[in-house]
Image (cartoon, rainbow, N blue to C red; front, side, top):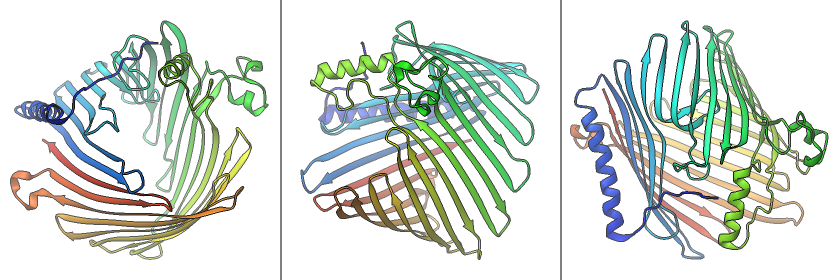
Length: 452
């Protein structure tokens, strides 16, 4: 199988100039757009990450740039959402991923898009191609789209994958629904077909209901066949229809007293499609083996959670939650009980403290955590957190303590000069402490926000 990758070779000074050119090009392009815009909104996010452990002395260092721009002029608009990762050593691959880069033209009866697109209604299907939409009144629309699909592994432009689909949106004042059907081809053969639907309903000010589902029709095993404990080779077409993702949220809020939330979710991870098997074969030839095995089928899990917040006072909010997990592949159960309280310090910040006990299938975890945030001045926010977990492996009775500590500071650079309006800086340090190893991380992030 041909799997194209975005390659940025070189290191040292040559790689530094490559990064600088990428940043300056993006900034310059946005400044040109700002010359005569109707509407312009976006930001640049530049971060530097350094991680090192005291056991292997391994250092991971890379820069990451994200650019998000939305430009609108009457019926025409441009949208860009992309990021690049540039490693300072050989521990990480360089990578550029353009999530979205498209042009949009809208008119009274519909719209037309071209470029790298994301269709949110159809489970965020991504294509390099075209989309045409049609409006039917103020609340209903339908769109059709087709094109090449970015590679599932690295989002690179390629001709192995093609995608076509249909999506829709409809609703009323308190009810909104959207979804779509998508067919994906791999080397001209049908590889995946799925239907996605989501629903949002707010009958009154107290109740909110949200749900989404994704059903796959070409999976090698399905939810009905698994529930009947049938071998994948013995499952018929109906039994192979798979619920790969399902989520339900029901939220109730009693003003100034309490709120309750119930969540139910079902998720089936990796499905071995044709392109996945080809990729596994390629990795086996490259490294000589694969950890996942010949035919990874993923894990099917169902979870439910009930949580509550109690507004005892404007400054004090105790909360609690109970969660149940079930792993279908080996009939293992897990659960978690959590209780905590958040103290709001008016305009000065907050303090959040909680304890939880979780049975994670084969382990017992006791976790205590403290987080706080303080507005030191109008332009500086200090954040800090500490967590301690006692971990016990049930089958071996092995126990150990794990700790993590982080501290960070957000700085509005406008305090330095009005010319730096829209520029913020985050400084953060973290430490993960285990019995045999301690990992240190340093993080610096610059965020530039522009708008008109």
